[in-house]
Length: 127
Image: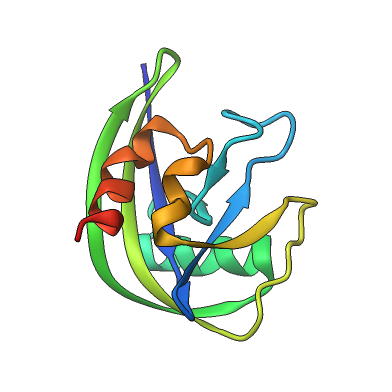
């Protein structure tokens, strides 16, 4: 089974968290997710996240602390995902036709998110 390493951004602004929707033709299409993506061979997690945010949302970012690292096994692949606290240096603008929204922490569980994100959502919604 293939293992994919992913870096994802948790961006909070004015009490809302940034999420994007996976586009048609991708693994888990239609699911909402925290922006980020697959790391390339030899790429650091911070470099990966900066590249992905630039490619997908045309925005520079300051990548902060790791909030959570977790592993999830899907039937077709294993995903090792690292969630980072991120501050954007500008306004995000979707570049690949994906939907984007800012959602309140308490409303995250109303979205269809990948199972790999469940632990993070629990962490973000904890009192």
